[in-house]
Length: 581
Image (cartoon, rainbow, N blue to C red; front, side):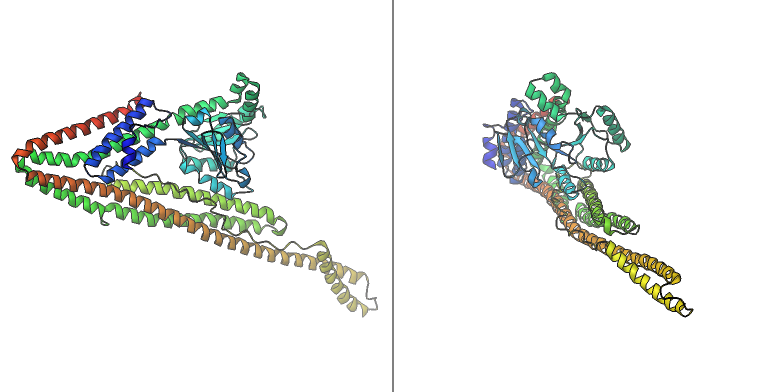
């Protein structure tokens, strides 16, 4: 790690959206600060600087392209980089990652292309489409969103947004605020402008102020083949590429700049604390004892912050328990609503003839519940992180870790399928059942009427047979329908129990991971603070005991180091200059 920081000044990574000299200045500044940190013996702060350098080395922007099947998701992704990116892993229904490099692909669903947009730091993730026929895939696709810097949501101009699409868009926006809506296939549908207008109305109705860009991936391909620039502009793909460059890729350096500035400020603050304490003790030896006492109290406070008795620890533990309970209740509540709707639907008619269609509907509803539960867990986890940060520092101005709840891939795969149901009674069975009832009616009434001198088979016995046969048919059908309805409800109940078990287990694992990440993150911050106070206390104590002959020399040395740290902070603050402009 140290060697990396030392050598990085000579081989400064070039950020695609920053001037080369700015990137080199950032790298040199981090290297200079790392040298001072190493001299101070602060390995913990060196780790922080190493992470900062890693972000500077690989500051790529991740864009996930997703949408329902048959909307042209892969064609839009391919149009952005002028290549077919869907052939690599679509047969396995896996996302395809497209990044910069020589033309190549590997079995891990990664494609490299020497395209200008990718060279500027963009990484495309072509997510497989999903629909009601494969609802579980929606949860897998949604798991990609929290890791994205931006999302392209692809629909087409054949129809306006459906209710499931609007619901999915709302979920996606909660997980990734930067969402760009794309209306594809405008060359196929002359009234695409009306569809775009209707889609904008749907977005406004759910308070989503998202860009909505019309494109045609096929028209773009035809324009490239014909070399027709005007047709290419009409396709809308160049405008989409420009939007990605200006609103997504070009703004990615803002996060990087702010990250470098924040980490430089944090490290210089920690280093300056001990130096300032030592300098104060050297300047005024009479205040040495008071300063040591003050630092001792600060040390006790920092140690309490690190210990389990700290308020932020209680907030984290209590919040994590409450979060797990609420998410489990949320899942059960959503699935209970589905169960009620399913039982109501089953009770309307015989479920056997439409059991396959009912199963597809039920799978879709379950997948929707799981997605919504996942989104709720993600947003609640972020709220918990902010709550802990408020408890950790009075002003709440401490870094919060990025919570990537991305281990939900194939979350519904372990769930058993809906049990099969006995098929409805066939025509032959129904006829035989009716004949048995009719025979009994004919025999019973025929015997009675025979006492009056009539034949066994007479109009009265035949009428009775018809009536009893029809009644037998109705009663038998009711009994069989009621039995199948009961079996259907049992099958739904078993499926839901399995969903609650499997998804609940996965959900608890994700939320425990959130708790561990937050605990380790804030514990590391507390340890950094304690280490800085310890160094300050030791420096102040040593300074109060220092001989007068050495005070002036050490004071001058400390002032030089503090001036260097101040210059580093000023230089780091200057990195934000171009953004402000």
